[in-house]
Length: 127
Picture (cartoon, rainbow, N blue to C red):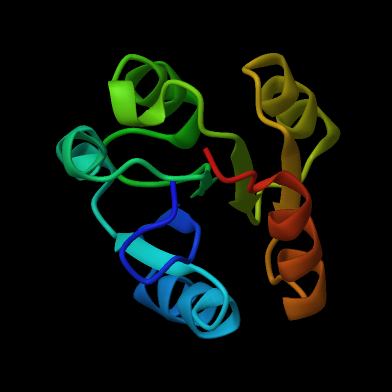
């Protein structure tokens, strides 16, 4: 869903402010990036924002990314949004589990900006 600027909307969920800032820096020219540092706030954010794509960390305090997927899918704003896991937990088991939960892609941190841009462009279809 393009916002008032006409740019697609990305919701980035990560407990690391430096990762959120890096994502916003890399994607901010082409996308409107909403940064969420507290994963327990995602439901509230999705009540206001309908993202075209969600970037989701795996390991976060309180609730991990895998546990957060059903919460996201249960809220109207997140029900259809593609999810890309962006995490340092890049084991084959985690990648497999992420895809089984319906993630469309997986990026291992530290990420290369060009990889992030390419994967977001591929999956962020304006709704």
